[in-house]
Image: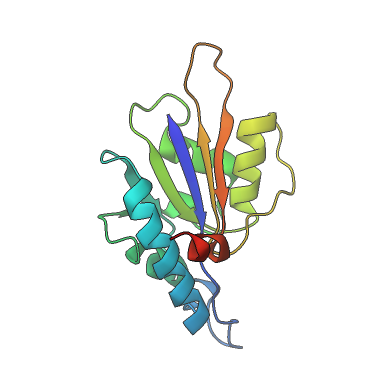
Length: 155
């Protein structure tokens, strides 16, 4: 199974009375989401399951992909790395999963999958970390790490 972790793009700071889940992308965040979304669209397998946190900034990020997606509370800001892995069926689901979510959760998911323990790993805003779990040895490995600036240089 492939597990693709996509951190939401840059969001506006929360206002004094605004819930965190209502934060929208900045203009820069929208550009980065569009750039990464267009690139990911071409890279993703046809059968990928696209799963997103219901937070506005994640919804705006995943919409830039241009594919159908499912909102899951298990991917929200109050979740856990274990709940996120359970929601995507890691590592045994037969279809790959693209997860659009938040820090520090996505970094914890990556470290838990790759090292067996949650650590404070960081995934940059609008960045993608692609993990694959194929082969007879049962060991997951990093297939790709990329951010919006690098994707902008690919032509």
